[in-house]
Amino acid sequence: MSRVRRNLGRSRRARGLGVALTIMAIGVAACGGDDGDVAGRTAVPSIESDSTAGSGAGGEPILIKTRVTFRDIVTGKVLEGSTIGDSPFCSGGTFRDREGEDIGSSDRTVRCSDGSLRIGLTTGTGAAGEQAGTWKIISGTGAYEGWQGSGQMEVKLKRGSDTKASETFTGTVAH
Image 1 (cartoon, one colour):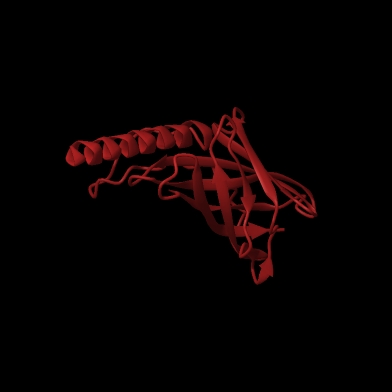
Image 2: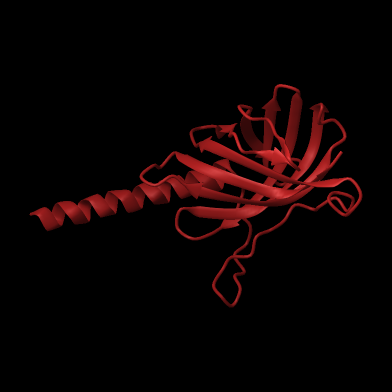
């Protein structure tokens, strides 16, 4: 009897993970084709990157850490430890996703106390509970007006949750 309960519990967790990954695929970004490479990883489609972003003068490394909640609309918070160069970036800021009709993937608006950034996201599939992809700044307001940048992102589903994840964005920005 206890073996049946354990298997049922595993089955429910597996279904929950499947639901969460489906929500991630729909809510975070539209998945591209699965061409895979020799190692079995999935090719990640990329958003066209701006040739001036991060290509030299004025470019700074960026690290954005977020906590995400998957519901009907993907929302979340920018976490402490997010940086541009050596300076803090948007700690406590919030974001909300929408389908990115004009960029072909997901469209995220990050709201900070000194302005906002609109970022395009493109993700592919990854290992169980994970996704990876690319991002690009689409536009900015306030302190972020005229910014350009792009990079890589990684999403990790929180263990034991179907609706919560953490994200890490790395790349380069120029302003």
